[in-house]
Image 1 (cartoon, rainbow, N blue to C red):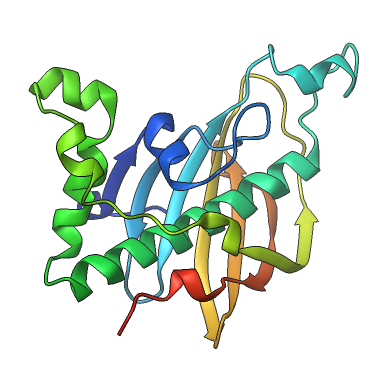
Image 2: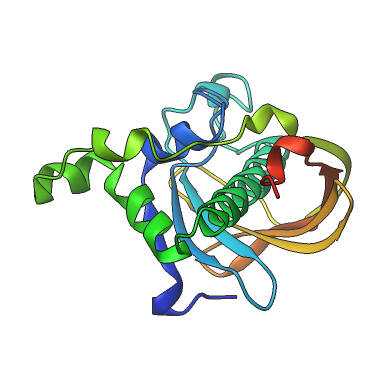
Length: 199
């Protein structure tokens, strides 16, 4: 499923690292491509798989095969990132702002954009109160791996928030390479109270 141009929310790795706690070698998102809030919240992200990945030293020598569990973890991180962005949108709107203002803040945190526009990234830092992403935990994962992923691939992730009940959330997730679905499933977990903006 592809996003429409008006849903594009391109964020680089520096912004992603401001929003979730993962770091290399287990940060498995290189950037965000798009976000949609309706009809179901959806986030598209990606990861470039290079031949220099540390995991290829042992999985498998002589065959640069990306481990399925890494694809699964990337989909989990995409789901967490979607939760954080939804939290930030809700918090911004609760404070009287708009989602569009939040997206501009996030884009302006990207160092490449800041350098091009001459914008001071620090002006947004105090206004961007991110939740503690460690509050999210996966409770159940049901994943099917449909095709192998090799070095040199652009792995695209998609996470859709399909159900919520109290602090539980279910995400329908999918990963593809060049339009071929390589993994599909659901991730169910607890978001925790830090993801609910104050009343």
